[in-house]
Structures are given as C-alpha cells and as structure tokens.
Image (cartoon, rainbow, N blue to C red; front, side, top):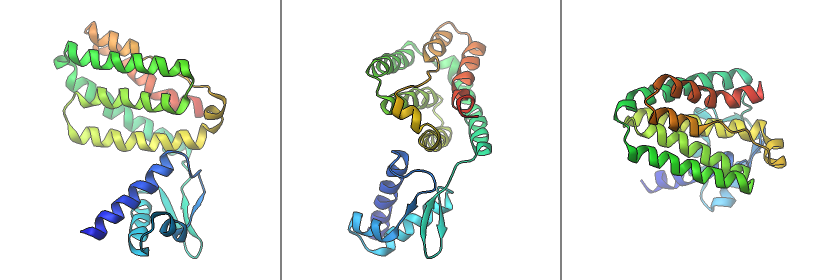
Length: 209
C-alpha cells in the first residue's frame, strides 16, 4: 500500500509538470532524473511512467526514455466532439433544476475570470475557463460525466501547452462568452445556451486547425 501511495504521488507530480508545460511535446522524460527529483526508488517511478504510457500521455522508447506524445489534429477534433457530447448532455440533464444559487456561482466565476483577463495572466485565465466548465457540468450530479470532463480538460491543457506557446508568451487569449451561457440559462432558453456552449468549446479547435 505504501509503494502504491508513493507511485501515485510520483504519477501526480509528473502529470502536473506535463499539464503545467514543464515538458513540451516530444520531450524526453528520464527515469533516473525522476528518481533523483522525487528521492524514491526505481519501482514507483517506473510504475508511474507505465501508467502514463497506458493512458497515451507518454510512449516508451527503449534504452532512451519516455517521450511526451505529440497531440495530432485528428485527436483534437475527437476531443472537442467528445467534450460537446459530455457538456451539452450535462447541461440538458441539469437545466430544469438549476437554481438562482447555481447561477450565482457561475456569475462569480465569470467575475473572477474578468478580473484575471484584465491582469493578462493567460495561464491563470485558462484555469478560470476550465473552472467554469467544471462547475457547469457538476450541476448534473453525475460523477462519471464529471470525471470524463476532468480528463478531457486535462487533455485540452496539454493541447494548449503544445499549440499555444506563442499565445502564452504574447499574452493573447480568445474568450468564449460564459456570460451569454449564464444569461440564456437565466432566461430559460436551453437551445441558445447549448448553442453558445458549443461555440465556446469549439474555440480551441477553430484557433488551431
């Protein structure tokens, strides 16, 4: 159990570095460097790397190391389509039971994101964008949908790090319209809320491809 816990800590640490852009696409992650970094034995490091390989995040190159997989345009399209199914479905499930309290939570996230936009902290702005989508999905109360969205947004963070390096550096970002989504829900207009949500999800694909 202790070894499993250490392995999970190493796994989470490597994944966090990947999502934070410490490693760029096609970068080689060295097993020995990780052993030194986390001050652990070879076994939990190798187990963590094997799990990341099984998830398609890394690929093992014998006698060389573990390479961070490049995300292809076709994978981006598939992920965006998957997110649309998850998020629109979650919105449909929760729409009739969304309360003023739920809407206030979304509005507060929008206010926070607006302040972040003014500070031009792009990576923090990206995190705020994800928080809005996670919160909106959470209202459906389906943990499997929420877990699927979490995994999808982690993948989208890798996409952003791979394709948006210049965006991060130049402090330029493109916003969706979360305010319109909230207003549509408030006005009981499900179809328009879905339309804007889809537009918002597709922004990443449209910017890259």
